[in-house]
Image (tube, rainbow, N blue to C red):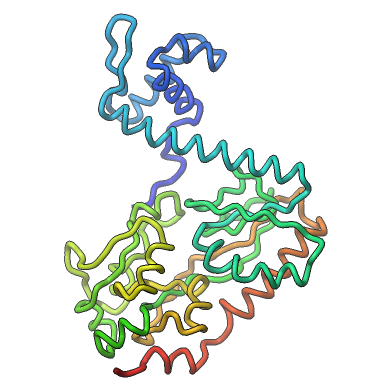
Length: 325
């Protein structure tokens, strides 16, 4: 189940907890954050009440992290470190006059990077800084000039344009088809090695369920056994790399595997496709709408998406997907 950001504890409490956990001392944490020791204690208590567990063992003036406290410390440290890095990157690029564009890592590596040479030819005077994230960009927090956001909600503080809706279908390497034979339909996938994306990857998205093999197969009234057979990865790029290496069959998102299919590195073993009303949006803060570099990038990307992601499926791709041994 995907979690809502609204279910997370206050950021101020997490920051206070991180300082207290790092120092293992509430007084030093209070000095660092320019707060009182009682304020740090209140923040920690807020977290403990929110989670229903103790985060520190309190012994006289010494505090030690509990097992749950260590788990939370690792997660909070990683999150705050990533936020700090991204913030510094954005500030540095803003000061240098570069256009900052934020998107998921899979979109950046598999869709955007192969097209940047075309953008440079069309706009040689525009400098772009691509910021890739392992989570869905949040325009309110990230402060990019342009963001590609999955499931963006309408907000008067931003202009949001729908780029495309999600489409997904099975993909694998030509060698995998050679070794495992042609398939006639979705039911044949149950006998194959399936490549799974860890459901935890979907945390923070605005939908109640992830799109995984269970969801995809249910569209064809096929139930995936528990536990599902195959390999599981924590990033979509790893799923794609595994498919390219012939390790199994992955769910191919049209917007990130279209180039690999066009060049023949990946094929579709069956023609079935599932579509969802889950949109990917081009989001621009209202105070940057009309800026020449922002509008140039947005116009270029819309044209690229129309010519690739939204282009009609070609017979050549389908013939390749049904190639025989």
